[in-house]
Length: 366
Image 1 (cartoon, helix red, strand yellow):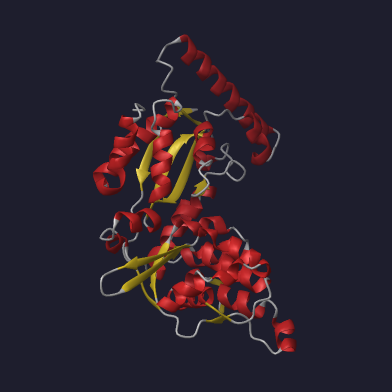
Image 2: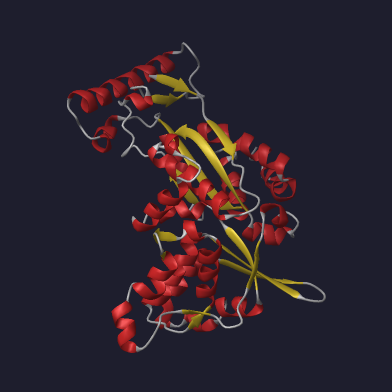
């Protein structure tokens, strides 16, 4: 049994989004669920991400948000009112995690679209399910990502997700109809994938909608329940289904988060430690002596059990998160990480986060 303190860490996001940098970033986050970080190699992200696609474990692919500068035709098609028709309801629903914005300059307009691999390819798949066989901007975007990030959008060698969704899935039916699936939009172009540094030079409104951060939390499982309530975000959490803490890999013991409200040597602290010890003893007994699966033995684990969690969200959602979780009426253990996280965000990105601190002060919440 170990007692550890809660912590947080703002992740270093690849500034230049290449196939390898994005792939390795996604693998590092995805492997947290299974605590298999020891299996990471220079190229292990390729088979790892392919398995995620095949197993439909696509939540892990939400942790890198691509911001694309696109042509007018791409933007206009994505915003076209025709997609609000009943026939395309599945596609319209799938697009809810894709953000589009028109930026007006004196001499020209610029168009930005942002989303994750999951959001773009789920939207494309939904459009195919709607029975739409024609040109669409979402196909242009997915084709662009396939061409430039091939190894992280592959199902098998030589077969990409784009192939599977637009053609191979319904090959027989399409041939019979004389169709070839959803096609890229004529005259539609993706000019570039914006780097993290480039995004920082845009206006507050642009960054609020498109820029994003990932934070790694080490907290107890009770606090993770609060964190994952923030719906407009993505999460990757250490899994008590697949992590058997009685194994040597985990030191054959369980880690618990120190409660900030129980002083050392106090009666409450002693009672808490006894509860943790009982929980650990029962878990080890069940998994080692009775061969109980970890996913069932976890029922005896307390809310104090240590859990690691990645949270990825756009800046607008992070502001909402911090206004709720750094406030003085939030749970003490939640504030233990949220308050210093806000201060760290202000140091790194004052333009986007100083306003949160000001808001909390005006409301008397900090």
